Amino acid sequence: MGFFTNKGFQPKRASNPKLPPGQYETTDFPVLTAGPTPRINLANWEFRLEGLVEEPVKWSWEEFNKLPMQDFNPDIHCVTKWSKFDTHWRGVSVDTLLEHVKLRPEAQFVTQFCYGGYTTNLPLADLLGGKAFVGLVYDGQPLAPEHGGPARLVVPHLYFWKSAKWVQGLRFTAQDEPGFWERAGYSMYGDPWKEQRYSDDDEATGSPGSQL
Amino acid sequence: MSRVAWQRATVKAIAPETPRVKSFTLSLPNWTPHLAGQHYDLRLTAEGGYQAERSYSVASPPEQTGEIELTVELIADGEVSGYLFEGVAVGDELEVRGPIGGYFVWRGAAGAPPLLLVGGGSGVVPLMAMLRHRQRLGVRTPAVLLFSVRTPEEVIYQAELEAMAQADPTFTLLLTYTRQAPPSWAGYQRRVDAPLLAEVVARFGNTPPQAFVCGPTGLVESVANGLQAAGLPPEMILTERFGPTGS
Image (cartoon, rainbow over all chains, first blue to last red; front, side):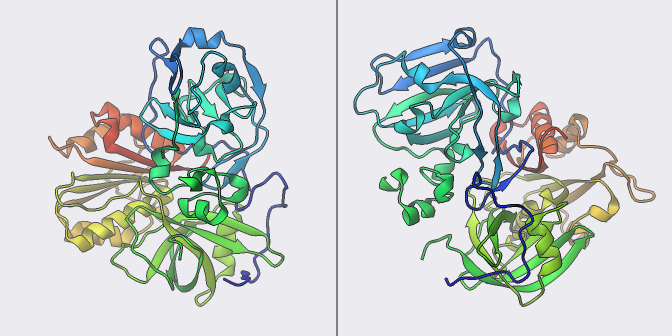
């Protein structure tokens, strides 16, 4: 398709190099979920690392809160087009969690699984090197249930559906196994800077996801 | 060609629904049938290449071939909705891609459970696609639309919904006005709360309905919780939310 413009359309917002293509900035924190918000009893809460690990590990809420925590201030980008800059989180880096397990060499991908049944997939490398954390505190308060509390995985360099709410654990896999939205036609990888919203965008741009 | 490639649609008709809501009928060169509840992305491009994208639910049923109707609410200071309201006329071209979304959809399959649709404001749009699809299919399993609006002038699709309810005894339209009701209104006049939802769920008797809930986050949160309190299992409740939290 040739170059097309909408006559008389003027940007109302200044362009911002922190904004990926097709996104706009919001100062709210919108909510997007496919079903009801699960209510999770902290007495029963647990977080697990399983799949291709030598020995699975799990933490209770009390144990998890004793892990070393850090502050994170990422920009986040939702596939529904909003981006939010400089969010304030406190949580446990995935690097810290992985000090507690020995991964098998064939572990290359991860499925995040959740209370309520949601899943999402991504390459293992995208969780390492300070790129991802389990967030427990948002803006100085315990993370609210509608935003994924008590605990949400946060992978800010990918579209935010790759940051599972109500996360219950990580399952390490050899293959990239599509999760909830990925089975419904969304991108396997979800790089906002390549605008990989849908599976067709993976084919168009090339990505770890398109190798499936 | 990619299933969701951008295509250049032509504006066929523009119809005001309420003072802040308009429906745009777009003719598509590469139309494919959508599922009721799916959306399209719409992209505006300025001279110089700046682009803005938004998603809009399809209001038309898949039986309306070759075109889609997008119902758009004017958002305060809205970059895309503002242009669509002020800058677009019949005959203009707009870039869209879709249909998108495979979860918040109603297929109208034989033997499907009855339908409970709960909408707030422009959250009624994907629910309208479901009702129009249901009407075209001739489905007779019961359906209820519980539609929350602030004032009488905000009832999107009012005439069509009332005509549908008149013509189809298996469809029930329940409006609730949260700020101001019409004169001599005898129906609901409050926010959709747990007792109200319990009454509506009780209409379905022993056959639990499939619920679709769409609207602002606050409404969707409270309705999804209220439906569970009224006995609907979580897997029977599908939600689509928009707008800020905490309001």
